[in-house]
Image 1 (cartoon, rainbow, N blue to C red):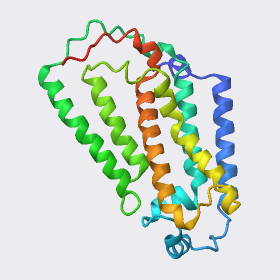
Image 2: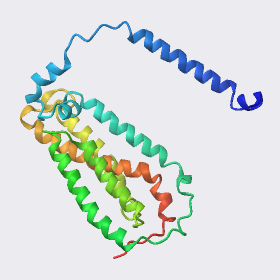
Image 3: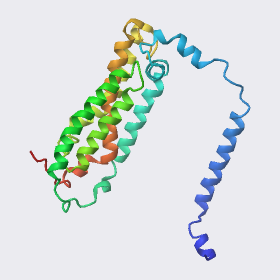
Image 4: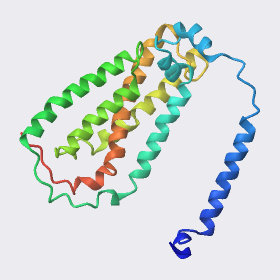
Length: 238
């Protein structure tokens, strides 16, 4: 290997970025290493306050109550990612007109699996307050069902295009913010749910977040549905 090939990808801006990243990593390590252990034992604190959270599963209690800000910001970050991908129309430059039509056996299998996956997603959503599960897991299953329909060749433009799909994308975040603002009139703190209604509020938020996550992950997979609408000629067969 010649020296020219070794240094062909080298450039001063890349080296500068690498150096700054290395310095930042070292600085963070120097700050975090001498920190003392946290004085609060989080597991004990969560367990002792679990009955006030509205969820019997400690993970759900943390994500939707004790640290609801984190979940709220996660939904916001996913929406920002969708908005960024939506500005890339070249994501659907591939010509799909030469794709073979979907097999009838595949279409029947998809029609059997998709309702089952939706049922599983609903179960994960409902069971999330008492057992492993919740909005993110349920949303991922719904997204898998959507991707299965897309990869099987079924027409998806009517499902992943239009104002209702955009509304579903932001539904979870808008409801999350709305409930957080509404409870401020009762508990005086953002996202501090009334104890008597915490379980119902968490289930309502998880339902909205499940819908949004399923649509967000589908949008991340599809890229820009607007750009794909005119390029995907596959038609759903009865």
